[in-house]
Amino acid sequence: MKLGDATREYVASKQAMGMVFTAEAYVLRTFTEKLRPNIPIKKVTSDSVLDYLNGRGPATLFWHRKHDALSGFWRDLRFAEDGGGILAMVARGPTQRNLVATLANLCAESRAGPAGL
Picture: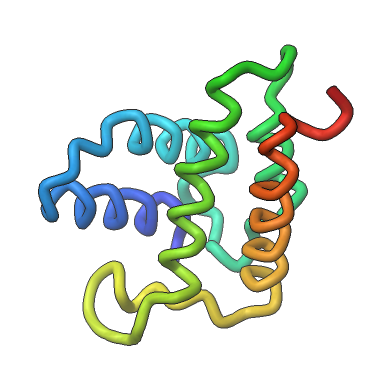
């Protein structure tokens, strides 16, 4: 599955459940634009996620918002059961497992802010 399709379907499913999900949708859209919508999910690396999170300038409170949105997206990919729609996007490859582990580590580190600051 392509990253653009996955993020659009994920946002649509969250909003269909009644969530507003506006800030998260923005984060996922900008993340997808940065990495290119046509990139296969299996090609997304933890380095590309970290590059997006850190951005170009100094760390801001929005860093945490981006982190939370991406963590939820990858967590749902990892733990979803086979089925239709968003539930069919189960992350089975080692890249996604490494990415989820990296995001889990980033979550633990995020309590003190991004590394190096």
